[in-house]
Image (cartoon, rainbow, N blue to C red; front, side, top):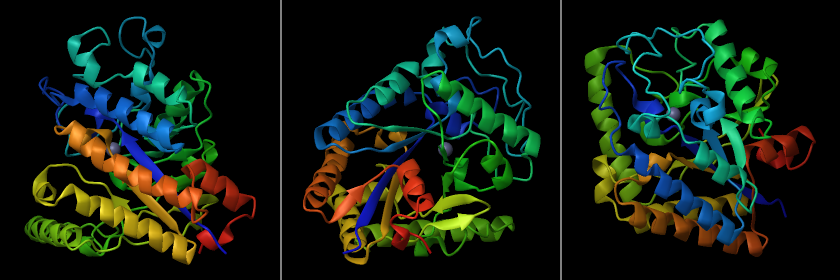
Length: 338
Ligand SMILES: [Zn+2]
């Protein structure tokens, strides 16, 4: 029988993903606690022999010896998106400042690379540039892809997979030219009403749709609707891997949804993947486990237990993004692809 597959990926970015203003020095207070989350997740993965993909911002991978003055010495071309106030690299603390704990995490990258069960170190660009925006030139995209790969090599890892910041896909030819084989595609849940693929430009309409999506998302999570199971697609010489489910945190309306419902949604997705021989792709950010870290880790552990049980029963495989792309390129498990 055609086997289904579970792919777990993390967008690992700490303070990099929520910057809007170069001058805001209080930005992302508390994100330092992501250390507890990453260590807890790695313990779960080691316990249940689960490999995941860690799409990591390259700056988090920098070691003290890469930054003799406390900051990365190489000057990269900076993007100029209209939503960002100031210059892209201004306001980044040095590694030795207390605030540096929100922007650098070599000890966590070391824990990922040395986990007793293989974990994939993947790219989330070097400094969380939104590659799929007009403000991102080819030159910026190339520097972001290349530099992230370069710093990962200093950890002995060859980066092959990438998750686009904000899941906004762009410059795929550059992605292929810089040695990548796959990326995770845009969100495809019904309650997004197609806005992930076709963003609404009109401000008022955007606001209204945003609020409607929040309510529909809440309904989807509360009613435990099975997440979508897409297929992998070949795009510009790369594998676009589907997106199924975001494991939400305890913020927004999701805090009113019991954790068990999130576990049930993931379990339904895995069961359907097993039945149909499809990919179930689960993603989240480690910072989404804040502030109730033990509760969130306990819920995620339940998903790991269910996944390991299904894997041991031969119902699903558990693979990293790189492994799925490698299988497909080698002509194996082609039922996962369109
Ligand atoms: Zn991100």
